[in-house]
Image 1 (spheres, helix red, strand yellow):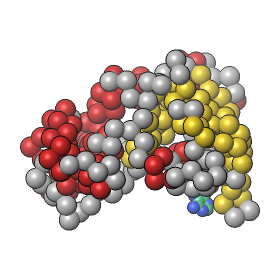
Image 2: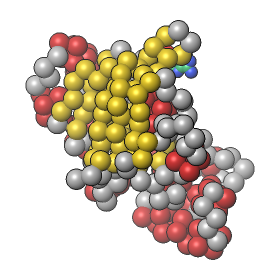
Image 3: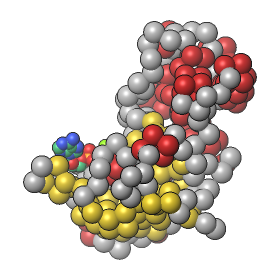
Image 4: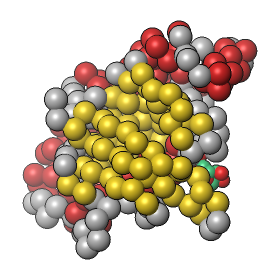
Length: 248
Ligand code: ADP
Ligand code: MG
């Protein structure tokens, strides 16, 4: 299978503080890789570097074989190929759901408005949001808003989706519907790199899991390996704390 995303020796500092200490990571096409690790371990920074929201200090990042961190690369062209969804839904409050979803395809890809709307309707239907197309975000539940945010990213037909703790801001009873959307995406073959605190979800959905510890991927492997038989003491400790908190 071909490599969708490759990180080689990626380093990132903020001021004098290095927070990613040389990350190597491959994500194959159609693969789902989950990043787990304590708060502050660098998961969000890693995703933001992949989306070129943060410049890296060393190493390189390749998307479908193209070095996207090379000098002179058109950042906007790359970002159009990568969908990113954050913890906060970030929908435009003054636009309807349909407008939120069609905005970038029209503005950035130059799609005719009617075609963009037809594609948006198709996606909204697929994710059970068809009846929300003309609503404004504040009329939707958090779960629905987050599903719209995912649909909005998908409307750009990305090669890769990055999801950063997309259920963390949700009331517990709304987490399931968002996880279902991600499950559906995985089944549809979407390539995804997912930072998550939802360990049982990661265990179920991930092809591979990486444990990030203080800016290094300390251990990676299949979900059964990582969750049932972690090799590294730090991974064992982290999972033990999760189990004690009743979250695995
Ligand atoms: P995680 O997502 O795993 O919780 P982060 O990537 O958010 O971790 O943070 C990793 C480290 O980088 C933390 O020590 C955090 O304080 C620091 N950090 C993240 N973003 C910034 C920033 N914009 N400026 C300074 N430090 C940052
Ligand atoms: Mg984070």
